[in-house]
Amino acid sequence: LQQKLIESEKLSAIGKLGAGLAHEIRNPLTSIIGLTQLLKENNHQNKYLEIITAELERMKNLVNQFVSLGKPTVLVREHSNLNELITDTVELMNSNARLHNVDIDVELTKNDTYAYIDKAKIKQVLINFIKNAFEAISSGGTIHIHLNSDMKSKEVHIKIMDNGEGMTEEQVDSLGTPFFTTKESGLGMGLPICYDIIHSHEGRVHIDSEKGKGTNIYLVLPLDQ
Ligand code: ADP
Ligand code: MG
Image (cartoon, rainbow, N blue to C red; front, side, top):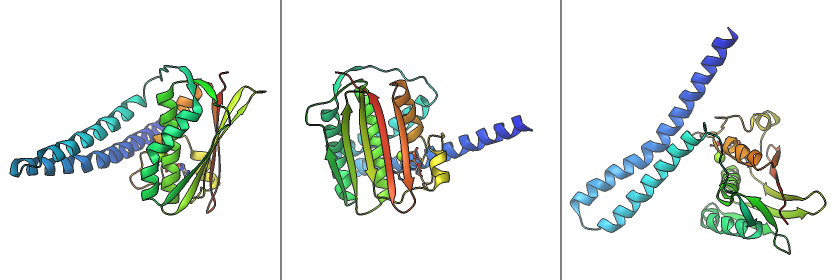
């Protein structure tokens, strides 16, 4: 019976994931089909081709994420400036933030802080955390990002705090479980991928949250002097 239950849980998780993926892929597909129709009819072709390429990229990323969930994480690590990485990432997210009426407040270390990391993957982690913060805020709020380095413990501490909707204790306990989502079109793959990347860097993450108040994420990575 236990085995059967586990199997049916797995199946329903896969079904849920499949439904989420189908939903995400249907939207860009619909717009691509519409655009190719327009391409046949008139001559703003470059603009339409740009949108088509962007939508195809989005679909490719979704499918890649789905596939990468089952594979071991391979890191390409280098001595990396975290002040720069955080600044770049926030810049990337800023137009989206303004759209949601969200302020991103950043406090970095006075001297540049370095870590031996896979820059692209840690950037992906930061983007995922910041996106979740946006989605929790919905409209009008602040995200604080703080970077600190601790020479004694040889650790880098990154805090990401939002004053969004927050979570119940039960929800906090479910974080990191693949496919756990409270969003209508959520995939519940963001945090499992983040956790996997952080752990493969010998780092750790802790999440504190209070319903109606907001969420604090504490990310720790090894310092590289
Ligand atoms: P998704 O964003 O697709 O739902 P994630 O793995 O990124 O998947 O997040 C899983 C769930 O964790 C979210 O659906 C949400 O309920 C909760 N969550 C994550 N980050 C936050 C946050 N900053 N504030 C409130 N809830 C959060
Ligand atoms: Mg997410």
